[in-house]
Length: 160
Image (cartoon, rainbow, N blue to C red; front, side, top):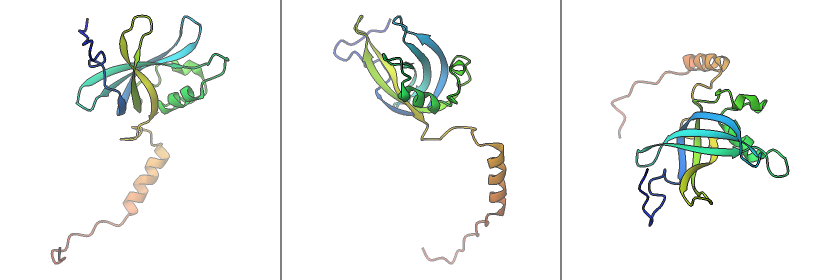
């Protein structure tokens, strides 16, 4: 059990903030006891002090009116979900996605304990999606690079 400082009950948690290069380690579908469906996600990230963390979140899929939650669908698309089927949220196909995540701190209303939670998920802005260039575009890029002018050797007579 972690000793929690009563003056700073969140000191042991991943700090609140926005983190690039968060890797999706696991995901699955679930339901709260109330019957509300969610997608559970677990990310690995490095905080701004270089400490490693695993932070989980439950992304609610349906509101109390029985409607899909648009913000959750956006978060899942940022993880690489195609938006075609909820079945793919249980098959681990998104594991390894690199995203930008917003970490928040929440307090359990029943126990009073604090925990870090995934608040928002965006496409990664630091390095972008890794390995997501289509073979056709990769071939085009190679062709363009081969045809691009080569850098001119430095001229020692340039005055600066």
